[in-house]
Image 1 (spheres, rainbow, N blue to C red):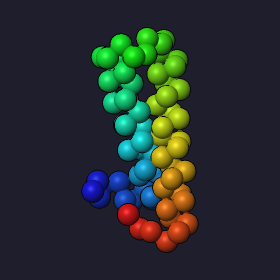
Image 2 (tube, rainbow, N blue to C red):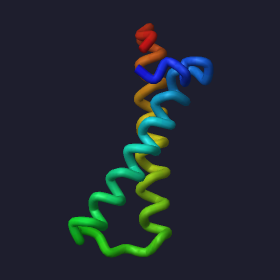
Image 3 (tube, one colour):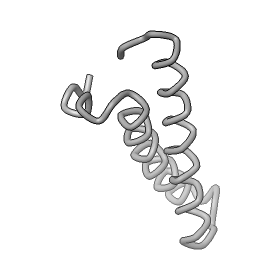
Length: 67
């Protein structure tokens, strides 16, 4: 899945996917009126999900998993 991102390496691939998931999560939270924060809190959420996913990709890479 998302084989075009393989050239960036596994941590970067997971980070990009996590950042996109953070965008979707922030959008859904706003639509459901769960979170009425400002733009900085949404940016923090997106960056945090991207960094967390990149760390997860790095751990998978260290364990020898390739995708």
